[in-house]
Length: 499
Ligand code: AHR
Image 1: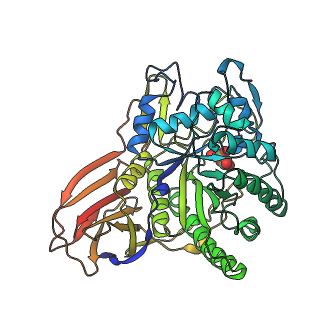
Image 2: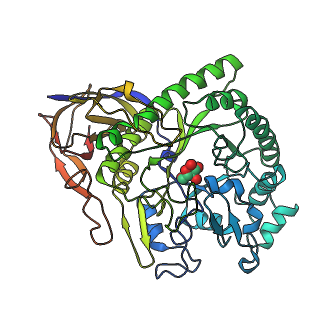
Image 3: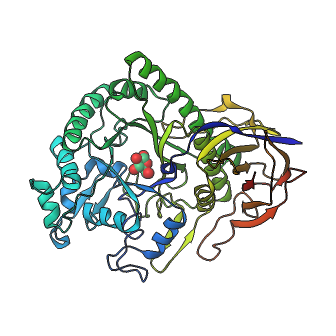
């Protein structure tokens, strides 16, 4: 019999709701033809799709990163303000596309205001200048009375938007990135950008451009910026057609967080800092199938990954990892949200929810205030195959983390300890796993609510004709007395247990 021990008295940390953040980039059909599609029957009076917004609302996404991604490193924000008909159409060098600039700063920030979503902007540190970064903060956050703030007022928004979250560039280490540079040079440049942005609005929070949490880049950037930034970003994409590699690969995030925790402690101690930088895990997901448009122009809409149930299990494992390390994570952003490597997939007249939508929705809805300690002892799997990481430089081998438990769990509880939510992903392909829920120093006092992401087999997908192949089943279970539960094969289960 497997055991899942949950010790609600051992609090690991407070969960920041921003852990359930998202990311929308000017890339393929993410914004144009996704979030924003004036020709759709679902478009509101501003051109934004109400059905997409409703699906995002159900995900309870508190924060969205925008406008990139690689896109931002050749994006000039001033192209996207003022009368739409006067805005230039630009050649877009990151994704070999064109940018109409129909959605710009005011469209995005007003939409965020209407929908109650916090914006997280990333400045252009590739082709962009210090002045552009400074003036963007002024345009968004300064009271009227200076040039850029007055221009914002003239464009219809006299009140400052008050954008708090600002990233200092995107993936500046990558040769594919417009304006990439060595880590030491990035540090010098980022300090200059940070200084003018903070002088413009001292209340903003800055996010340094880290890498995968495992690289020398991360060490140099953290050393160089820890005293002036609030967060250090990490990006991790994993995935494989091999089911086991796909399930195993998210532990790369656990490795990255473990290393960053040590580095952050070390830098804070050596520099005598009275604060600790947190992690902004601002791109993470399964992504390995559709790479069109990255290395060369393509006729296909780029990055329209079609997810299967196995990918949904991998996403669940990522979320368990984030909850176990929540004391370190200031924000995490699923990359991305609409059409492009995304849980929401649209065509002009409708949408369907991809497999990965379901665990994200359940975790976001049922995660509680405090993450608590879990321990799993059950069947394990040994990954025989060495992962093939293809061309992705941030997918380093992880085979020394063998063997791995087939069950992976995390747990959260409310402030007064009257409810615990236990989230369990069973990666066993064929077999259910019976596990005893060992609730340390706690008694179950009523029926538990159970939500389970299920599908017929690990490679099952949803599409427009079969939107429910992978779906959520709701149930109740009595765990008083005998607290054993049978976790279905290839499933994610969320148990809400009254204590
Ligand atoms: O999310 C897709 C791309 O992946 C982003 O533009 C980039 O930052 C990362 O390489």
